[in-house]
Image (cartoon, rainbow, N blue to C red):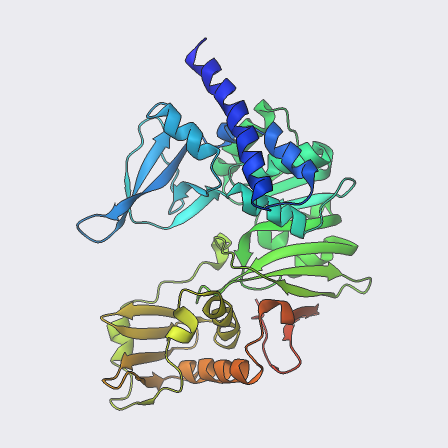
Length: 400
């Protein structure tokens, strides 16, 4: 047997084992999706990717190691059939997989999403045979292939903003016998030539719900989106479109984050020290500390999204233990400095009192009994995107 033949035999076994593991883990209840997992060769869609080296360099930057079949076929194949996200691109720069180098720092801009999340998304969107589907964010093409395997290629459209990424995914899809409609397009505007769709599923995050996606969904159809923003608060929403063109649906449970659509990436905000220089010398005691929205737990993850609705143009960074909030749109800033008594002092300046708005959301959240994501609904009507909860009012997504 040749090396390639050995790899293909191993890949069949690893696909079966991955499907069995996903079934045991409860990743999906519909066995037809597991059949698709056993059929789709994920390794064909990830010829190269990066894995964390588990260490930082001398500058404190995370180190990422390249993995390819040429470098280490066993490691490459095992990772391809692990339930893990595989980073395929940093900073919009396509790697040279013929001669890859380790990465030091950088922001991931494309990946092959972990299979359990891909299946969860298709299941959450209630995708089934006979549905026409628009996938936003082709990426590696693996999730597209799963949809084609389950639904048939004729009912699947997938768009990607990065031409090179789409070309690589298209080659892999066609080589495997899948022929969905593919196009280079900005996900904010969907894809009018193939609309209307029964389901729209996005593998990237949006600051708000685009009008075009609602307009391109049939009445009774569903849109599954991840919502995000410049505070990196995330929520998932499943909207159902009505006959009158409005849409409504619940926030879904769980903590999921996706890369934002590239046109909505957070802008550079400069040097935090420059912003801090314009703040008043004396501040006030903060009602709540930043840990309420920055702690590594599900409630803080959810609360950060709610706070982000109140200050959608704010960004947060920490320098020397001081937490800075900067809003480059309105020219506002705030800083939180730890005090000896364990509390925080806040100083604010500009037309928007950033931390005061965050405090108002946290207070309302506590008064409402700390409701989880499933207790909120999102209503999309005209230009308004309003979060609905019986005891928390006034939360809206930005108008973009």
